[in-house]
Length: 324
Image 1 (cartoon, rainbow, N blue to C red):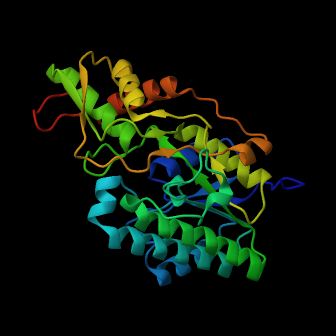
Image 2: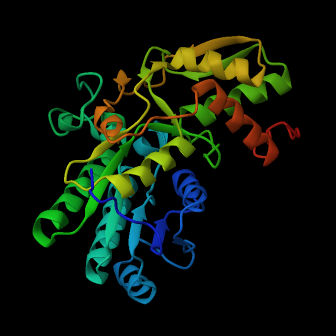
């Protein structure tokens, strides 16, 4: 814990990746802090281009950087484009951390992912489980890039004394999530499938895999609040897990989603699809010791997310041309 806390008042905070789910939640959360939030559109700054990142940082001079930008996707996307997930994420983190050091930012927060931990890590997964075993094969490319980002942040701290910290969020859900069934994660996929099945009067919703893997889910607004808490309260080399400390099976999640959406049919499990890691539950003791707890219950968060998707018109059914 930092003593005194790192003050955000009067700081210029760049949220890299502000259009993404986590980035947009951070922008919402930082709006109540006495700081200036900086953003830049992807069309105006390609984070994989080193010279462009260095020039933008030199011209803008942020005091704080939160690196929420990344190439992300689910199991299918990771399996289909391993080069893209490894290369692009390595370039983004190398360019942003290097430019942050060059301009002398006061603090940087790097966001990783719980997939950095070994496939068969002891549960719940503590921070020191990193690099103690083989990764899950279906997302190893993304995981390797994120591990490199953690180590790069630590290296800047050791070699140059930079206050660079890292946080490892668990599986996130909430407004702004991706609803493309070929690239999205499990919560938006289930919300969309359950909604479309309800609209069409379908008898079943298909869930990829056996439904047995256990997963932890945190609402993205809770995540953003935890990340701001870490910016203010934490300064250390070790990364910090960000989660709720509770999990459930994918089958239990699917039933909860169907109940929230109002789908009354049955679940069908497509066991030809991979399950991924058997269980992913984070040990959040380090974060709890810093004084942070989640506020949004899973059912409440799922209901709010579903309402958000409906209000934004994101639950359309193009295959049947229905207005959902």
